Structure formats: C-alpha cells, structure tokens
Image (cartoon, rainbow, N blue to C red):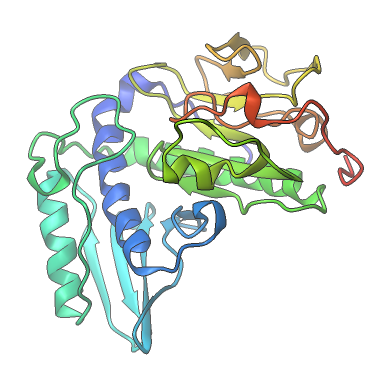
Length: 300
C-alpha cells in the first residue's frame, strides 16, 4: 500500500456524513460498556487490516467486538462464544442501521442503551435513531478513505515508536472523525476555567498531537494537522508539492491541506511537529501547554 488515493470531500460528502454517524453508533456502544480509561482512551476506534474496529468490549463473562469491514462492506459483530452477524454497508439510513445494530445485539443477548444524539457534528444533528436523511454509501470512496487511514496509521505508528514517554495509541475519534496520536510531556496541564468534565479529562495533562482529518463543512479539504510546542517556530518540509500549510484560528496550529491526499511528513519530520487537532472541538488553548517541552525522551 504505497499509492495515496485522492479523496476530494465533494465526491463523497454524502457518504462521509452517513459513515460518520454509523461509526458514532458503534463508538457510543463501546463508550457505554467499557470502563473509563484516562483521557477517554476507551472511546475511539482502531484501524485494522480491513477497516475500523471497536476492539474487545466486555459484557458479563463474554466479550464482543464490532468491525466496519471496508473490504467486504459489512459491519461485523462477533462474540466470544462464536456468534457472528454481518450487517451490510450499503445505501441505508442512519436510523435503519441503528435499529438493525440494536436488534442484532439483542439477538446476541447484549443489552445496551446509548444517548442517540450525534456529537461534534457541524450540521444536521438529527438523533441517530430518527435520522432518515443521511443514507448514502459509495463503496469506492469508502475504500479510498480506509486506504488513507491505513497508510496514515503506519506513519503515525513509526512516529509514536520514536517516543519513550507516555503516548496514546494511534486511534480514530468517531466524534470528530479523525485519526490521531498524542504525546504527553509528563506534566499536568493548568486547569481550564469553565471546562466541562469531558474536556477536563481529555486535557488534564500537557499534550501534543498529529492527525489526519477528511474535512467537513468547516474545511472542505482533507488535511493533516499539527501544532508545535509553544514558543517555538517549526519549519516542516512537505513531501507533496500539492500540500500547503494553512494557519487556523489558533495561531499555533497548522493544517496541511491539499487538493489530492498528500503524504504526511515522514516520521523524522513528523517528530518536530505535534499538536491537538485545531478543528477538533474543543480546541486546546495555548494555556493548556507549559512554555517548555520535554524533548529528552524523543528519539527522532
């Protein structure tokens, strides 16, 4: 997998909005049934050889997982006692997918309740169990999206391997619909006045991240994002002539956008840029990072 496919947002916008909401159903089920882990690490999905998975979800003396298989185009639900159900990924409404997922879970003797409101959605926040509007599914576009995720995951994994301090897995946030990896300095972050409990836990310690985001109505281009530690100017050579840096509303944040999905920085270059996604609500304020950054544990 070495060819990076194009993923213009306008060519799969309807499909992306549907898929985004489908992943939120699976992600919310994982959130409801798993123990809370620091920084909400029990919440994201993970890239697999075929798509995105919840990983193992405990349920009594059993466990199960849910995988969006973008090769066979099914949502596969498997249990530890050998049961398996495949739900087709095809043009169908979010509400229809919601109903079938919970029907299948009940048939597998798994009971779960989730809050049906989608989160971090820029437009049309229709409850998932009543959303008959979003129903597009373009197989070819989804395959290109997954291919980019898989290639990006490989780069981010190498980037993560260079750091011996605390670091997140490479994970996919179904709320903001982006793939990210986060490093920690080892120091607590200053408290954010007025922050809710979710934000306080997510940003309880100094963090920096890099990530890939396919875009939405706020930025109609796929983008790799990064933010350097504060009080430092970073020059990052770009490997793609199509990529261009764009300064966002956060003066410390840079998004690398392109009309064709560009290669992210190599692991060596990537090591000098790290950020929380500036477009991921809520954005991390500059006050959330101390003026110095501990680099002794970075092997890049």
